[in-house]
Each structure stands twice: as C-alpha cells, then as structure tokens.
Length: 112
Length: 115
Image 1 (cartoon, one colour):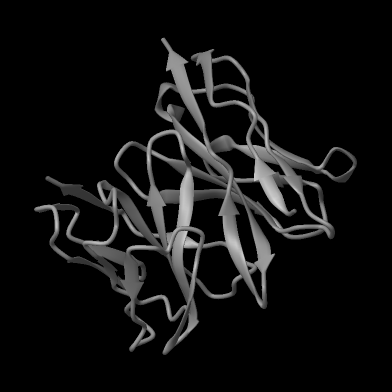
Image 2: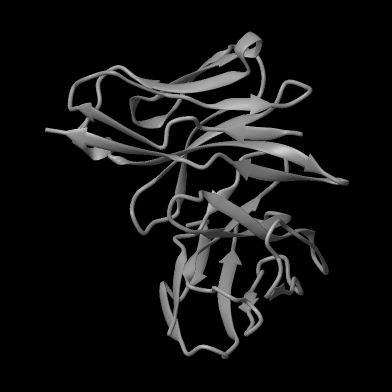
C-alpha cells in the first residue's frame, strides 16, 4: 500500500544528544514536510522540500536540520541546539504544494 | 497577511446532535481549502477538500463543508455526531511564502462528544 512511514513511533533521548527521525514515502510525491505539534498550538512547519536536493526553512527551523538525497526520504535531525525538543513530530508529502498533504503516523520525541 | 483561523478551541456536543466547526481564512484569491481530523497520538487524515466549483463539498465519515467567499469561511458540518467523531479537527490552506506554497494549519478545534 502507498503511504508515508515514520519511525520510530516513540523516541527517548538524553538532553544534548542529536537524534534523527525517519520519514519515507512511496507515493511518488515531490514535496515533503516536517511539522511539530505541541498541545494547543496546532501544527508548525519546521522544514519543507519541493524537490530532491532542495529544502527550505519553515517557521521554526532553528535547532533542526534536514536532507533530501532521495525523493522517497526526508529525515529530520533534532540537534542539541533545539531548546525544547520534546514534541510530536509529523511528516507529510504532497504531489503538488497546492494540493492536500498526506501524513505519517508521527513520532513522539521525549528528551530527558 | 495570509492566514487561517479556527475561533473555537474546544467544542462539546451530545451524541446525535448536529455539529459545526468554524474556519476563517485571509487570502487574496480563492484558496484551496482542506479539513483534517486527528485522533490522539495519530497522524492527520483528510476529511474533505475544496478546489473550485460547487461550494458545498462532501467528505468522508458523513462530514460536509461549505465555502462562503463573502464570509471568508469554510465551516465543517455534520448532521448527527457519533461518539467516534471525538478528535481534533484542523482547517488548512496552502499559503504563499516566497516562491513556494506551504500548507498552513489553523490551531485546531478539539471535539468532545457526550453520551
């Protein structure tokens, strides 16, 4: 079945460590996105990529990094520079930036 | 500035009652509009979308939404709510940012359904 796979579903890390969240899609979509979700704040865009080897910062990119070496993959690294990394992270893709996005099931990151 | 607003943070309805969730947008042209639903700890699922044409659109799970240009609104409705509809609902609009468009979400409306 086509879709978006995020892994792992739950992730625990110690403060000061970098951590990478995986996002893979087999929908043949050009555009991919990373959102952060905190209670009562909706979804905030971290990074997005409209094509392989190109990506742009979203509204809250500080402390995060991404790569887009393959069309299918858009991993997100949460660095030690991110002041408050504990959150629910959602990856999405779309065939056209004007169209609907399809979402993965999310990764809940807890930093202790 | 282009934006999307959901005025209601939390709504409570009784099972079987009708539902309307509000969404307002600020956008120069006729926008594409989406409603998503999210169950706890899950990703977002698309309920329905409006691109053009008929302003009343039907979605999954018995939901519908009406685009009203004069009111800059795209409210989500359901005639009779089921307990399984309890979830968080997000309205979204692709908004231009530089040379690209980003799917921008409202802050969400949490729906509680009473038995």
